[in-house]
Length: 154
Length: 170
Image (cartoon, rainbow over all chains, first blue to last red; front, side, top):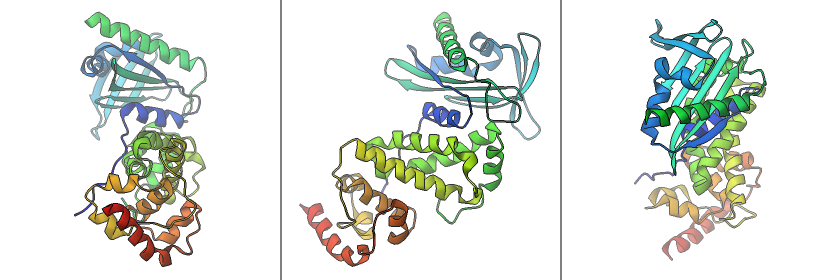
């Protein structure tokens, strides 16, 4: 009989912590939102309607598929700046990169609701590095807005 | 995934090393199941933390990896080191000084509950077993990776097998 070896768990929040470790200047904010994973993720995943509600630099965002099938997002910021993101979106996982911005959100069910983690900020173009200006505070603020938005949608 | 599958990650590692965060994410999605597979049997209850600490160390130091073709071996070495470190720190195991009492591959494969077999061993023993039985390394290479003396391992295996079987049937 082939033995069944134990395999370590590696959830989406741990995945975000690991990936953020490779981004110079990145910080990960975490917060438990007292709602189910499905309700929280429904909002995070609705990028076209909800991303701007918790990522204040985003005003409009439109998703489309690139020629290779990759998910792309054309975004316009508060100051009218345009950005084209490459996007990874799957249950509990959002990772977006443009030339100037990086956004990561992860979520897992947790005692008391859903553990949500966020990272990102203004990117130093061409590098896995963020301008280290209040990134921790900005990510924590994004999670506060997300928690409020989940509550609003009740 | 074995040590022989070395080169397929090279383009992805190079893109990730150049700072493409999407490539980093893609690389992580490949390496995470591998790290989880190595960390699980060594760190047991600390497996999730060990896998996380492994991958944090991997991505924090990715740019310092000089040979992208060696990526998996590099990840494996970090995974083993972090798993042993966390398992020892948790004090759920008794430290050992040698690699005696190592169950054979057949003992492991015949075990009804491998978790129970592993839980009877020290983290260092578990690491050798994982490297030998799961990763296909010989004991000499496995012990070298762990910085543990292994010169007498093979001659002790017969005795270790008996010891293990006695413990197993007790």
